Image (cartoon, rainbow, N blue to C red; front, side):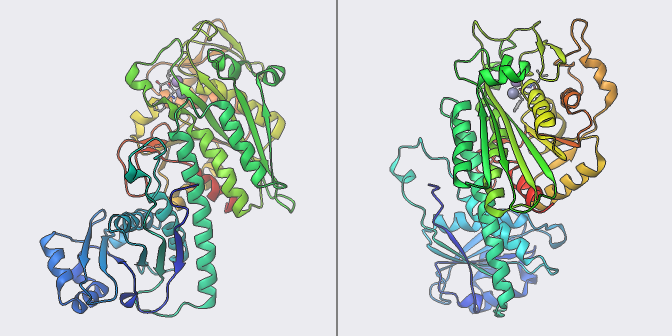
Length: 511
Ligand code: BES
Ligand code: MN
Ligand code: ZN
């Protein structure tokens, strides 16, 4: 069970500064001396807040926070003020990091009960904010601690109740507001749990999260949603019958058996659209005979982050419910070196018949995805097809470590996908699918080769996939950067991030 599963996010009523809690938290947009709520609390506390703000140079910038003991001047034991930055730059998902900051401060102060005042942003944003608060609390208190043996890692988290005030003036919420609050918290909780589940799958070593383990995980999710979600798992023999020559070649060098996972969610009513989400599922990428240097290999257990995202998202989609039929596909295997491994110069026959000359065994993701795409196109025939892959270092060179590269030749589809990403706050940026770069994939012995040259590496990978997609409306998300991070932020600890889960769920349940 999640370490933070016991935290409850509740709607709090009454005058915020009178709440009997261990920690009372609120935000300021920039300079606190211009914030009327800050001033009101400050005067109750006899000017302590503004004194501390001055001495700690707290000026309400994003990322700043300050804690003050109240010494009985108000019922709350401590006050936490969190900087929210400039009001006009604040988008809804920013509240996630703020809520996570509050949750961290609570645990640090051994606070069991917290009250938090949602910033007044106008418009009809409060329930969107509430959803992100619920997410932020659960995402921020996520910890991958399974292998830490110290006593302090085993202690349960102090934080138990995270109360939310919709309004700083103590106005009583209407029944409609209370209902919308519960819906938003439920939605946020399902999403955050799915993100944290993806993080677990990514953070577990490759020795544990094998292709077989990923298949069991998908089966457990299907079992949980009996009647709505089904799953089919193919072993190597079945994949051979289906002609998945590219997928099988990549996994040949490993003693871990490959698994091809296909999950289906069917809504109770006639579905609006049929969506298909494919995730790259390389449980470890050594590079194969185009072996990676040790440093580049160190983090390659994360190369199944796409599969982790789509499988975990399915759980939240089934929890929340969707009007669409949703398919999730992951071709899972391990890219290793051995006497059986595929080699440079090999010519592979893909499921759609295209032949591919291997000039780099480290460009394995596109091979597994190519056959997964052909399977999806021919067996699922989706209205819309998406793939998520830690595909190229080149994409990180182009966009940095926090932004995914999005490629598509379908302007309408990519626009609605990007709109969903905007709502969830996941960082994505469109790259062109420059068709002229296809010249790099020419081969003299086969229909194409699997890698181009150094320049435009993210795009040539996208063009390789496009070969198998043909005319299906499709969006490709290269998430090599944001799938895992070295520098934490409040709602994202170091390691696997669970990137793409939130946007997949958003798109599938609220297109
Ligand atoms: N899994 C890697 C891409 C990757 C790199 C993901 C860094 C996360 C962090 C992928 O399979 C790979 O090795 N790509 C090669 C492609 C090249 C051989 C054309 C790369 O980026 O170097
Ligand atoms: Mn690789
Ligand atoms: Zn890879």
